[in-house]
Image (tube, rainbow over all chains, first blue to last red; front, top):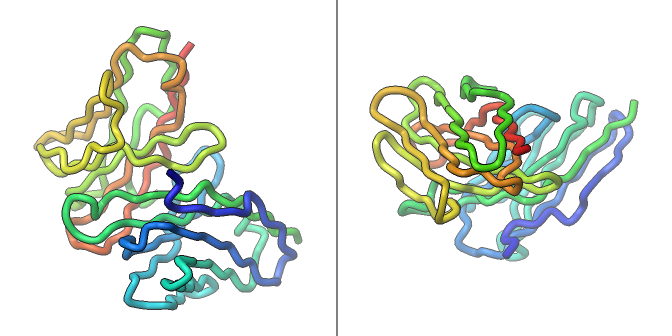
Length: 115
Length: 114
């Protein structure tokens, strides 16, 4: 039961252009969403998060948008840089109780930014 | 990676042996999580611990796997009688106790079973 889905296994973008990574979820109880970036042989690095009470959060070149009615979130990177080339994971967690810490991850999207 | 230290980075075991994976969280973080990543897949939650307590172990296989986070020392993920299917990257993450704080990950232990 894949509750968090990243339907694009890969994305290729030209340097300087916008990268848009998408993520869909099925569990309407999720209330906290995160994006992580991962290089080979390293652990995931936290990028940006958003609470379900918001629909947008921005941090430098990274912006996350949340559409609760569509159960969809996206990560925008602008402008894209070659160093952004990595695997990007979206993750979600549930509110309250003992489940709060458990993150449910998507399968990841490989982003390649060409010079 | 934000100070979460995992060791060893690589571990090779033969079928039937035991594997012990260690995780030291970021200083001040009291919550520890373990995730497993199989080849070509995303990370799957295994267990969530606080000091001396298991909070959520819904992702742990029922047999051979155990985890602890003692009052002193690192968190340990223990796999007894390893099988080939246990080969994976095991990641530990930690977070402070405040809600809504992101988890920070270590670089993982890559377990290979011969």
